[in-house]
Image 1 (cartoon, rainbow, N blue to C red):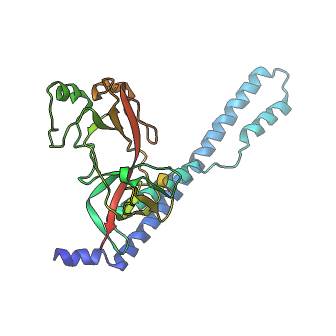
Image 2 (image 1 turned 45 degrees about the horizontal axis):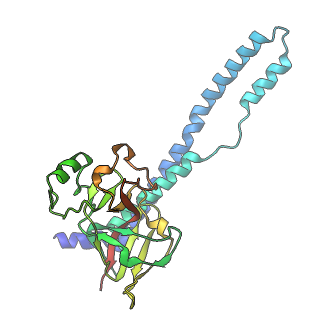
Image 3 (image 1 turned 120 degrees about the horizontal axis):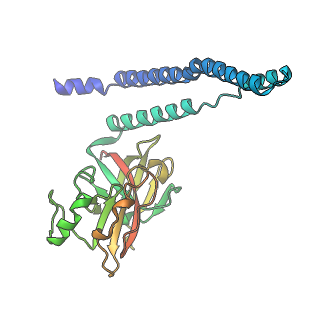
Amino acid sequence: MRRSCCRKMRSPCFVALILLSIIICNSYVVSCWSTLPSILEPRRKTASSHYRRQIIQQHNSNGDNDNESKVSSDGNEQGPAIPVRRLLLSYALAAGTEYVLSQNFVRPGFKRLHPMQFIAALGDPQGQSGVGAEKWGVWESGDPGPRGIPFDQFDDVISNGRKTSPVGWEIDPKSFWLEEHGIWMEAPRYNLQPGRYLVTGGRLRTSVLTISPADESGIQKWSLDGGVLYDVTHLPCRSALYVDEGNGGSPLNARREDFPVKPGAEMPPVEGCEKQDYAVLFVTGVEDV
């Protein structure tokens, strides 16, 4: 029974119905939002004109009606409406639509991942291809943040010489990962397997990421079938690898006031450590081979 329902939900008709519903809701909400200024504007204009008229009557004792009508007319002048609300709302709805669809539907030839994986990527944010994918990592168990060690537990972990976190991943205070809230994360698995992956930043684009096999020097190439690396980067997720330079580098040197990190911003430095920022990509599917 469940398999039969799943087949119906994945049918072309069902997908078309979902897309049509999203488009209709998008248009309706945007139109309702955009009419809000037209409802409030007459009241604002009336109050503004009345206030200006009172000011003129108080300060123009000689009754200069020309000045009054000039100011009143200036108060009523309206420039072209700036569609900021419409633009932002449309962008948010489009991004939400893309994210929902990327989570529930995959392109032909790909299979959806459960749970969604996270790639830590290095490369030119404006590049569509590059080298160095052998230095990339992947968190295969989903979001590493909830599996991490909170900031206020760093001292307890290090002072007691713990080797593993409460959920079982290996702790290395000389080479550690931090995320945007200051949580100590497990290290991703390096040596990303060659293949094709569906990646997104949860915004307006889902692309196919191709990881090539390593060449004789061990270097792996990567490429996107559309957009650039920035387009498929999830900006709120910030991550960096910190490595002790031999000067007492440690998670204990991280400063609480440096967190949380703003979306798209670089991770803060940690005293005594060399830092490498990574872009975070959502992996929603892999090629079905």
